Image (cartoon, rainbow, N blue to C red; front, side):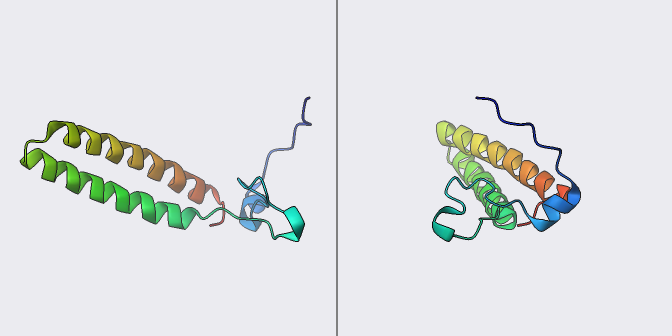
Length: 95
């Protein structure tokens, strides 16, 4: 089944917030629509990045190669996530 194509969102739409955004149960039973918590995601991604880099350095000093690689992969993933969330925040989404 094809959905009707929605018009592109404007900056004002993002400023007001997108109701039920990423919430499959939004509005169910009279609940208020959920809004994205982008600021919290920025803080958590930044904190995880710093901790992963610190752990990678610690593991590298102790010669634990597999853990060093795992922490580097985690740090890169968190940097990508951080960049994407900052992009969404700068675009005007609330949170």
